[in-house]
Image: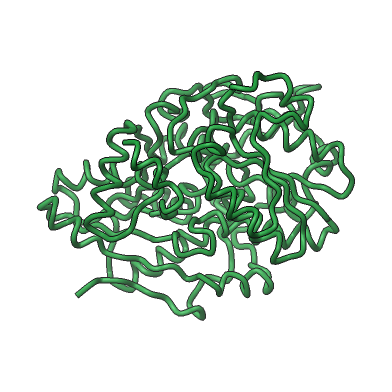
Length: 417
């Protein structure tokens, strides 16, 4: 029998978990690049609504999920926890492998979790238009969906190489009313600095989005990863996972998730950090591309979150704001930096990090599709590649990973491998 743990909607967490309440250290504050001192809330209000800024700095352990957001979550949450028995059998391992599947969301990835929350809080703050960037298109799709749910216009700058590689993501954004432009674009002064054949980066797309917000009335910027409030909204993944594992009596040895900016990884891992702090033997691993290894090869220092230097300076692991990663197919992981929360946890050695090659990623993705019946997003396949390596050792009782989204809009990437 297939082992699958399904929660009822009534059992879904009704709060987000804020790890900042439990950490034995403080995060380094974002700095104003003009003064190199902690940035004032007034400057951040130019791009973010007040409710989200409050969450960004909150030390409350649990933050209630608003009823309108819960109503929208009910479309697809709670998401299932599934035992990958066919993968276990193929590998011949004694290790039990479980995955938390976020691909059942309306746009096929975990990004909808924070998109709905951000759209709601912007709506009650009087925002009319949300402007954002997207790498592979999962975030742009999610925000476009959330925008139409809460009556907001959505404009998306999509990294050009992904815009070209993933046309169906653009169609999905358009279906939900999102306006999508390839980045670098000719719509902003920043985009026009780059040649027409530039592949684009998330850093450039972020710069274009923020530049647009600063020059448009009633518009706010929305980010799909990195920031504290984004990871906060994503903790619904890990909170559900903890409850599901408790139901079947599984105490995971390793928790794994892919890592780009940190939203999927943070959402999966943060609810388990109190267990690590209390001394429980749980290894938590962020898996990133070998071609964009912000955690494993980056420097821990202050850096801009975007290429043009419009964001505050954030203390994080970074490859440098001008880093242009190769045009890998896992476009959602092509970011030069890592979330300040994830960076601090890694710096304090409360979590681990690993990198895998693109060849390993697509081999793992194809294998998982054939055995488990789900084509994983290339981003998610990074986690699968690492899990396969660990499971082959056979020295762990259980491994749990987050399958952050499906790859049915990424089939061209699989064909080309």
